[in-house]
Amino acid sequence: MEATTDLKVAQTSRPVIDSLENSKEEFKALIDRMNNDVQSLSQQVRMADDSSDPEVIGRINKLKLNSKQLQDLLSKMETMDETAWEVARPAAELAYEKASAASQ
Image 1 (cartoon, helix red, strand yellow):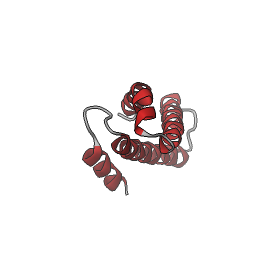
Image 2 (tube, rainbow, N blue to C red):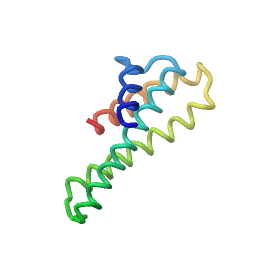
Image 3 (cartoon, rainbow, N blue to C red):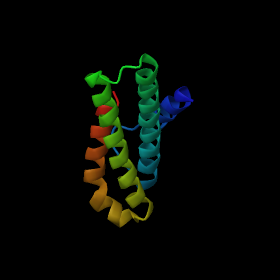
Image 4 (cartoon, rainbow, N blue to C red):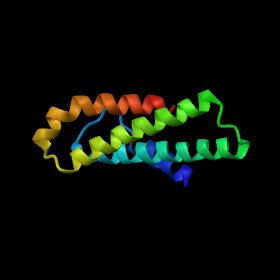
């Protein structure tokens, strides 16, 4: 499933956030990828029975935070028209870039 999500991200990735519909797809793909990374890292922590690794725990928390921010923006995007999108687009681009960097 992770390969499928990575493929979706690769297929939908554009240099910048563009139209509202394309941006929704980009947000969904990145959210899926981040959630998969959280699950994988959480499983590693459980299997290692070592919840004291601050680097891994910090990465999990960072991914969760950025995923939640993208989910909140995506919810708002679902009710936007193109005019509202043009106003919200700069903030959405910034949030997307930040979340994308966090998932690297």
